[in-house]
Amino acid sequence: MGHQQASAMEEASSSSGQKRESPEHGTLFANIFSLTFNDHFCMPIYMHHMHSSNNEGTATFQRCKKKATRLPVGADALLSKTEEDNNKASDSKSQGQDTNGGSSESSRHFWEQEDNPSCFHLDKICHGNGEWFYDNVHNNHVATSSIMLLNQPSITYSSVDIPEEYDPDERYYFNVSSPSASQNRTAKNSRTPANCPYSSTPYHLIVQSFYNDMIGEFYSRTIRGLNEWMRDYPPKSEEDVQLYVHFASEERQTLFHGHRLFLGALPQNDKIDSFLSLIQNERCQCFEKLVFCGYNLEDDNLDDEYEDDIIEDNEQTFFTADRVVHLDSDYACDKRGFRRGNRCTAYNHIRQDLLSRYERKDPLLQEKIREYRHNILLKNGVTPQQIGDVDEWKIVGLTDRKARRVWLNINEIIHTCETKFRHRKVVCIKVNVEEANSIQAQLLMHKSLNSMIGIHGAQLSHGVLLPQDGSILEILPWIPRNISDYGEWTATTDRPTPLGEIFHGTTLNHLGFRLGRESVPMCEHLGWSDKGLKACLMNETNDNHIKFNWSDRDFNVDIDMISKFISLFLLKEIPNCSRMYKRAEENDFVIYNTYCSKGEDKVKRAKQYFHSRSRARQYQNDSSSQDD
Image (cartoon, rainbow, N blue to C red):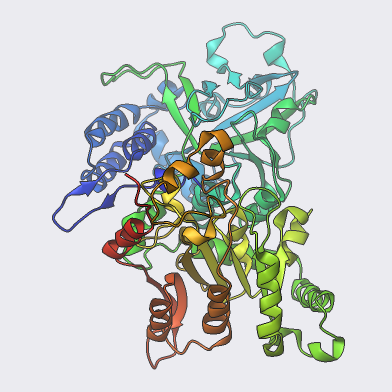
């Protein structure tokens, strides 16, 4: 989750109107606005973000208006249609017919919506022998007016916009010419569907976002936007959609079970693969629609000045984008939106869709979970006679990593848990997502838990699988600003951490607790206030400066803090939100999200209690060493 905070939208720093700029804010919205919109869409977006701390708003609005003229190849012919023809076409579509005599689904396609800036599609496109080409032979047998409705531009993929710390994977070759680009058809673009059959799945959807090799980033940057779009415009059938994940980085191409697990929140046929597998497939295959989401699309023909002319051969280039954009949820789920309360509902939508879809797919899932929980209890020394009803037990999962961010005293924590809480039907176990070798194994591993505790990292993202009222404790790493402030976004308490965003507005309880100097088993002869601590931790001769980074640093956790969490938030009933807040305040926990009732009505709702900014800054000052 390391980079999500850095790319979040800007946050208002005070009521006086002064703004604090997020480093990538201008870049993010420049990418968003560099796409195609109609005029009526450009102005609302510009007005919505006109208070940006830079001047991108005006420039991007102008680009937006200019690119609103872009139409599919052959659009000049469409413009010559009479008003009567247009009215007839409109009437046919309103009755569920298109000009081919079939059923019109344009209103159901989220990638064709004017307010969707990061998705586009290509019609009747084929791939074989390492080449992409449009199905022109099919076009010969279709009425000219129908061909004009096909989106078949000359288009090229460029990898220049991937994150700078990644090396682009040059195997992603995508370059296809529009039918109008060549006067004489070659053998290459005269292949027939018989030689290159069409997939039985009509929509093949390729998704991309920055840092999508990290499961938490993938969840927030890819799944959130797609889930909102597919809720707005669901496909007629899940069998109509097949998904591919595009990993732009050469060294990070692994499609993990976690990717597949979270894509289960979306309506699709579960035949998930990587985009690279599609490109490297040697068998010739055609697709009715190839859809790309998480990209910026640019017209290579358009100058900086506004052009009135329609260009016959529309040449385009598409680039990787920061995320799959859904403007409504992006606005509600930015930093300011989180602090306004429960305006961000997108993450609750994902979680509910994820859980309900797996329930529908497996009617025996609850029975399997109970059996899984029963086996956990047996493996941890609870006899069958002691077990009784498995639902009465609380199973706490401590996230266990074998490399980087290793929880050094995890065995001691588990022993204390057994000694203090076994008689109260609590069992603490290690959970390591890397040991779950299938989607089903990951699903059962996490749905069997009542609570998860762990350092900031990808595995805590699986906390979304916990049952209603489940509890997550995020252990926040020690980040002394005057030694190394890298990773500050993983320890914020005045606003959500990246994980805090994932659990925002859900029926889960997500708390955080900051570690201190005692959690770092380095330079132990020096206390946090001692002179020379920074020099010791940053000593290059013993590689401390590398090991000290939060993402690589092993850690210890205060045993008493874990005991308090279990006692106060897992075992003790929470009568209302105010009592929850009081318990957290008295024991130095932050509440990123809680599911509680506000008063006597007993109606539960999501609530957040962040620390004040002054309190968060004071912690940063107090946790720093005395070195200059």
